[in-house]
Image (cartoon, rainbow, N blue to C red; front, side, top):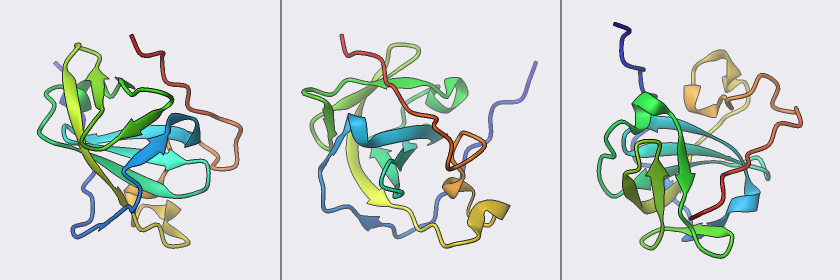
Length: 130
C-alpha cells in the first residue's frame, strides 16, 4: 500500500484576485495542492490558487479534475470542478500566490509548475465540459 500524496502548504493571508472569473484558455497548467485548493499557472506568468468552498474528497489523491465552467471561463461562486471520481466541487475564489525570483529551489514549492522547464511549450488543455 502506497502512502497518500503529500499536499502543498500554501502561505496564509493571500491577496484575493480582483477577477472573479478566469478564461480557461489563459491557464497554462494546474497542480492540485490539497483537497480544497488547486494551483493555476497562468500564461501571463501569474500563479493563482483556486480555493474550493469545502473539502473535495480524493482530489489530492487522484490529482486530476476537469472544469465545469460555461463559455470558456471559470467563475468563483458560480462554477465547479469535477474530480476523477465524479464529485462536483464549487469554486469559492481565486487568490494570487507570491512567487519571488529564485524560488524554484523549493522555498516556495507552489511556484514550481508541473512541467520541467517554465519556458517550455507545455500547455493546459482541460477536457470539454459535459
